[in-house]
Image (tube, rainbow, N blue to C red; front, side, top):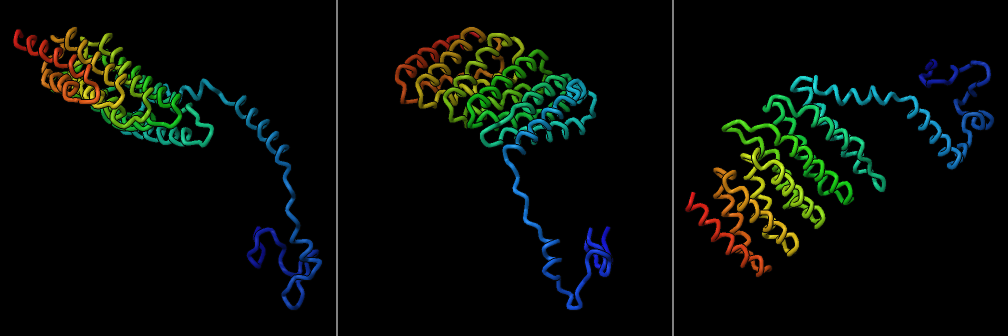
Length: 294
């Protein structure tokens, strides 16, 4: 408790054990009592104690109860789930920004929460995905290649799951869902990440082509960015996917043929890779024949 002089923990003037001199200054003995040298901490011993305490805390945590926090997010109302996802992304950013030792626990939980809440009303899911898409596009550029590729592969898993749901007429949810791939393709400096994006899109086209509606727009957007890639390996992978998509899924592209033509034309216009440009010219001619026949 604070004494009469307001200093917490010090006895009031005149109390036994600490007598104030008339001058109001502390005597040498009083100074020796109050001002003690700081005890030097044994860093190795402190680290050992901290490790033991951490292990004890981990052992006492109910993992099942913690998992229920995330699985139970499906029961939150619309505003609460958006707040929950927003703050979970903030925690994950802090974990991933840890110098020398980034953690992916919250990143993994974000993927799980997205799965649990994907069946929500589409307008609510659109609000959730607005937060998550920005987060994944950011993490996909992480300097740690393993984390960046994990983010891209997580996007693939979520997109494949999302494409199981039929898109309603006059809605563009698929385009918005696949947009992070397009954002990443234009921003990622890592060749491995750009290659993985094309592999993921190829997998989605093969497995979910019949479910894709507005998603063709984002897919052709990614492939158009690949056409301008300075590396021939990336450009060729993008062109192969664009050519195979047009040939094998022409009837499914629907109202997005203009974007498909523009995409193929991008490979024709690029200058660094002449062989790809020649192949694109033949592909564009075949595309024109298919459109004329249709």
